[in-house]
Structure formats: C-alpha cells, structure tokens
Image (tube, rainbow, N blue to C red; front, side, top):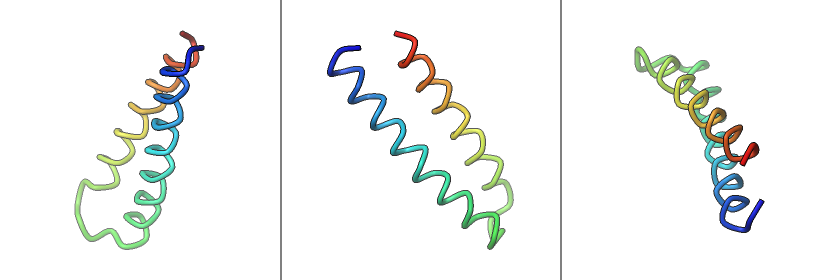
Amino acid sequence: MDKKTKKKLEVTRQKIQKLEQQLAGAKSQNDEPGEVERLTAEISKLREQADELKAS
C-alpha cells in the first residue's frame, strides 16, 4: 500500500468515527426524521470504501 492509499484510508476511518458519534447523538435525540438512516447509509458506504482501499 502506498502513502496516498494509506492517507485515504486514515481519512476514511476518521470520517467513520465522526459519523458514528453523530449517529449516537441522533439516536439519543431523534430530532430529525430520517437522520439515523442517512448516517447509517453513509457509514456503510465509507466502510465499503475502506475495504476497497485495504484490498488495493
């Protein structure tokens, strides 16, 4: 894995961590309808990207 791929993977992991924190907050407050689903979908997408980066 080259430097560029490692950096992309690290940034993706950071985004996932941030979104997981937002998801926890959204679950506890539940102010906006659909926010939990949106965050869950975005996390799933980023995890797929991370898996692709790991495979390359």
